[in-house]
Amino acid sequence: KKRCAVQVAGTALGLSLGAAWRWHLDAAGSVPTPCIRQHFATPVYHRALRDSQEEVMSLNAELLAEAEQFCSMDADGHRWSAKNYRGGYTSFASLRALHRMSSTFKQLEEFVDRHVQSFAQFLQFDPTKQLAMTDCWINVMPAGTTHGLHLHPLS
Image (cartoon, rainbow, N blue to C red; front, side, top):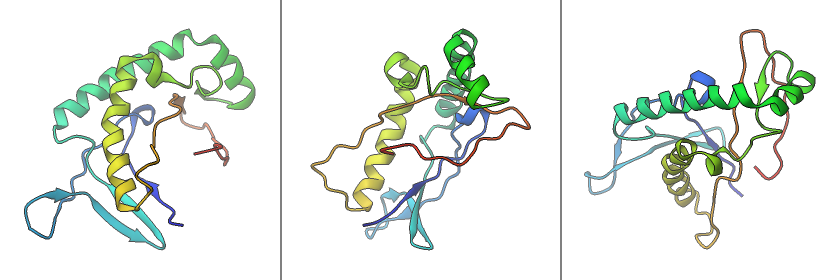
């Protein structure tokens, strides 16, 4: 069984999806494919989210604005965070299907999905099994906030 990790460069609220470019050509020498390197036994997928940096920056701005809106109205999330995520905020316990609630987060899902499918093909996943985003939430971690080691079931 192959294990994998997906790297997406980022900053603001974990939503700034970077534009680091690394191209390799296929055997024919013409079609750009993602760069996949072996780090120990783990292949790491690395490719720009979109070809257009402007499109990514625009989505980043929309995601940040919407994340701030959700954060300002999510009283349940703030109560949960005060007990379980000291110094920070997460919508995990209150709003964790943002891609089903927001067209902006849905667009993020669509951008990421093509990369998930590409990496799954590289890993030779069973093509009859559909990979899909099940949860999408916001984490805000000001300086000094800690986020302890934990697992997310089924991820």
